[in-house]
Amino acid sequence: MLIPKRTRVAVESLVYIASKGAHHPVPAREVAQALNVSLAGLESILRVLREHQLVSSFKGPGGGYQVDGDLKKFTVLDVVRFFE
Image (cartoon, rainbow, N blue to C red; front, top):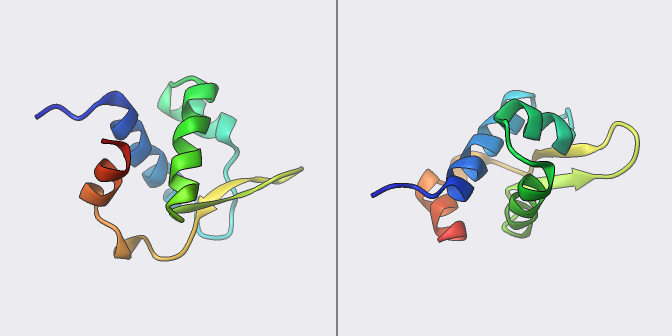
């Protein structure tokens, strides 16, 4: 089974954001550039991740996205199910 691009980008964005540390919000533009995806497409993915409480968002200077809570409570399959 092939994983759709949207689902793959969701997993990759979580990994990227988590790699930046728990207390360092990562701007969506940075994530989009790192993953070579459109900002608009990424923001729709991040919205779903936020709705499922995997990431939190912070507005304003120094804002961005960071992992919300313990990712050990979720599996890659959970993330796949959010997008399938």
